[in-house]
Image 1 (tube, rainbow, N blue to C red):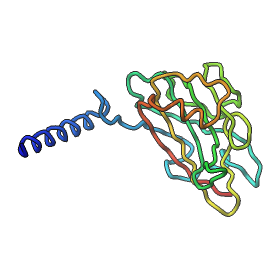
Image 2: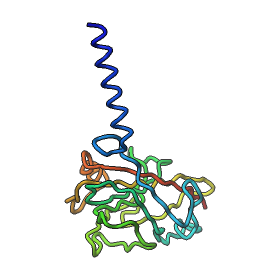
Image 3: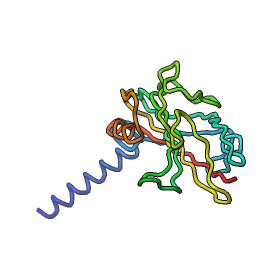
Image 4: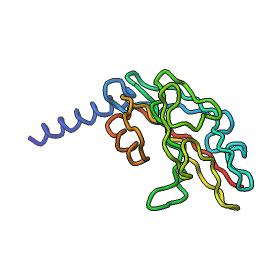
Length: 187
């Protein structure tokens, strides 16, 4: 009986490892999305053009590229947040954009601040209470981390006027792959 249990445990672990090594082909752990922001290296300093300068907000989003969305991806979502600050229990949301077509491989610099773009991509209110990208702008002399989290989803989201909590809830069970890129900013 004990040998049978050990064999079952060994077989189960072996199958789990094999599934994970398949990288998402058949239920294993998917490979992360590959993210590139040409204006700065992953973990590098965000240029002032995409942040604030002396408290002035330009709200110009950087160009972003990605690859590696797995088969079955129907849309891409991006959440940009500052985890160094908590307001009302959440960190600071700088941008949430979703329903980016699965065929897209990037966003241009300066995404318009519109609730719904021509291709159906949607954006929600940021920490500033406005639609679209809200540039990094920590109080001087501090440096904050800004996390760009990308999600490949197996659906398009039907949210209408939504909050970050609504977006996160709607994504549950639909995430096929994820990628993270971060930058640092200070004035």
